[in-house]
Image (tube, rainbow, N blue to C red; front, side, top):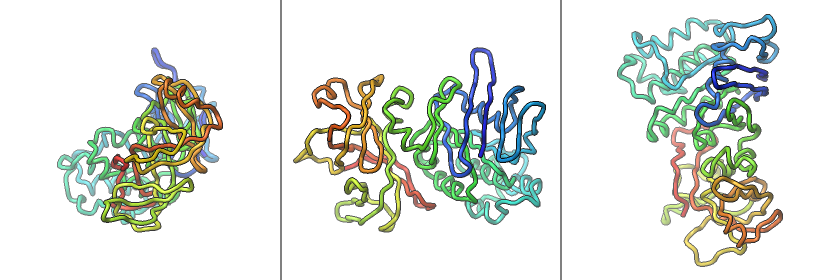
Length: 368
């Protein structure tokens, strides 16, 4: 487990974080621009230093009173937004640089890294001729071949367009499954994080505003002002039941009921992760009839909180927490209070497979 107790002052800004991070899986670090997310990663990597702070990874104290482990001795793989590849080397040269330096250390080998990231066709190419997505795959491969104990990814997809993001996300899913390697993943794109992360730490103005399981944090109405109507919502685990090819739909099962999404190239029985935003949920006191929406689930109101753009309504949908965002007028008309039984009408959802697959996509799709 990674444990932090750090404080770093800069003109007009102070980062002050005391936090424990999970020992495996992906932990998202989310927050607005300027919140201190990248600075936090730099402290963990040893690229910034807090003279009084403490950073401990497992049994190793990387920073403490009178102690400071230099970056190269921490076993951290760091992937930046701009890839930072060696321009004078080929793809293979970039990878070999890390591989040679880490020889003898436990971790993924050359063949595993090249196959996982599909780098074989790129090995002979020069870095200057790569696309943005290809450059990031090479940067991830180079970081992996350093045999890291911890991976830090600092907005690795921020410079890519939507199509290139869709191309590279499956590779990041593969990375998530590798050797239970702990990964800290910085992004301001919650749709991206909902696909990859199990835990989330929300950083605002240099401090941790919330942390915990991603699904619980996104559904917490008390965080309405931090997450926004597009960030808040729900993440549900569902199972693909069957395909309705004639209708162009796939049916998925959730404990609260069946849902329909645009046709997926996924075998029946596969597990998927579904996400929807709070602003894409309508609420009704009775189940609506003669309506085009197919995705309607029974829910219970758990809590209400004021939000910058209305009322954040915390819901329980089957075993899962969720959130809807409605106007004050709608909340009054529906006479909502904790314990009220309602129906959640989902206007749009995002779907991604939770296992490793090249055909996984997280294109935001309109639910029928």
